[in-house]
Image (cartoon, rainbow, N blue to C red; front, side, top):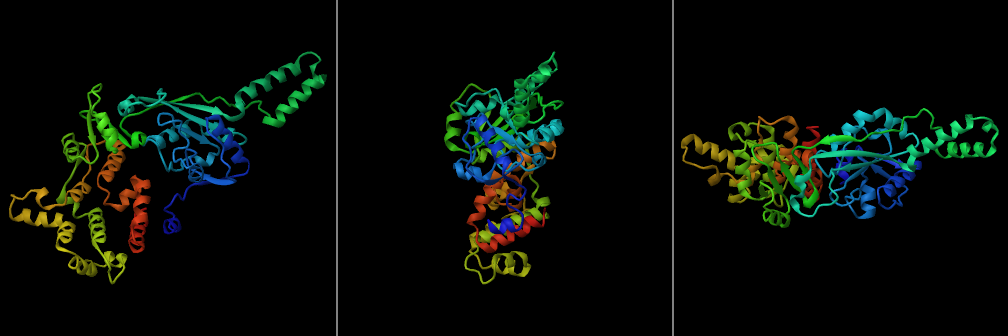
Amino acid sequence: MQKLKQANLYRSELIPISGKLIERYNKCLVKLGFTETKLKTFSIDGIGWSPEVAEEKKELNYLNNGEANPHGIIISPLQKGKPVYIPFHTFDREMMKLVFNTYEDKINDITRDSAICLDFDQNIDAFYDPLDVLKYDKVIIHFHLIDNLGTQQQQQLQLIEQFKEGNNFINEDLHKELLESARAYGDLRGRDLSIPPLEFLTDSFYTRAFNGVYILRDFISTIIIFEDEKWHKQAIKDTTYDVLIYHISQPQLMDKLRDHMIIEYDLEKVVKTKRYERIKKFELALALNNTAHSVQTILNDTVLFKSYLNKIDIDSRKRVMSVERYLEKLEVSNQYKIADIVDSKLFDALHAPHSSLESKHQDLIWKLLINISSKDVLFLYWYDKQQFYKSYELWNDSLKDWVIQEISNNI
């Protein structure tokens, strides 16, 4: 990952945490039912997740109490606007925007000397069956302060009222209690520590529960798409809900998404785009072996691209150029079918969210499409960084250089 880090493409916006902030972070972990971290320094993202703590605990979702109960931690106002690097749901970023937009001033005040634990409550104690994800309706975001700061404020205010009564101003025991409270929690007079719960309504989204599920419920019919075959097989046995259920690898899925006007394609238009060129080059790169030039040089040079295209085996050559071959044949006769000439995964990769979709659904459908066929390295980086990082590790160094170049040129 060193090359990605040097190009600021690998978790470059994490916030470093050390000293007193670690103590507050640990108090949040304990309050949420987790164990403390023993790390002396680490970094966090916008929702309070830390890659170093996840590695220490050997648990990517260490801020979850089961798949149905995710949590967050705010220990710094700098978390505002920061990425959520491993969102459990695609709406996690929107929830954090809502939190900071609503309570920014209170967060700034409270995190001077405390921390806020977030409980994202879907009113679901636990998942038992894969279609339980359909119970998602609204999320109530509850806020809890470490050290029960709200309670301590009330006790401190009560002590102050006692101090004002009669001759209590000379009561040494009362003096001691007030000083101890002030030393432990600071002067809590006048501070607004009340953070009422927020309500966040869900619509279509992706969740990493059950190893990855898409819930599309803003269209003609509700469609549930599983990434895990085991959970898909279990879900299709459930007749409780009137929904369409697919596994992400089923060819029928793309047909249904087109029929429901969720996705669309225009091959004549897309071949003129940079996205198509990027996909075609990546397809060639995967077919290259023992080249005299670096992969990056080959993909950046038109002459070398054609040279190596003619060096690969005929089946690979046909696959790389299948879209253009199909369009050429279509000019002569309309008897040709896409499936007869164009590689199926390449065809899938050239789809886009339907132009009629609202902007809030565009990103979700792009993520779905890139998970169905991950041939566009730029969109893979944008919409599924975890899968991008896994794929990146398998590429040779020269292909990595080209991929970094493509992403850096489009940021």
